[in-house]
Length: 65
Image (cartoon, rainbow, N blue to C red; front, side, top):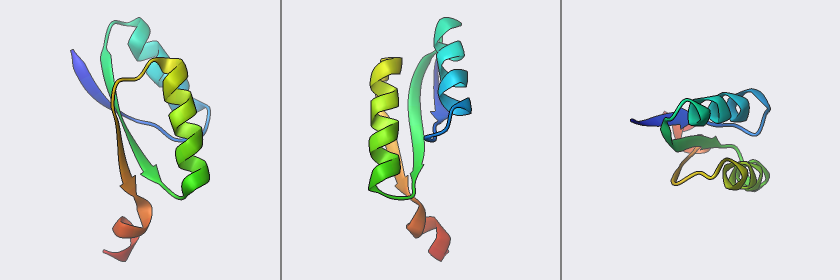
């Protein structure tokens, strides 16, 4: 089963993603980007998690609405 997981640059979301992968789920990731630094950190985390697809939503677009 494929699911969409929210991922940040913190520790909780990558650990949750790791556990979901171990349970057999195929993950795609959604990251609310606050800047280049947060995006680079998430990209490196996803490489470790063997992620397939990252969806990035710039936070400043959401904040305006």
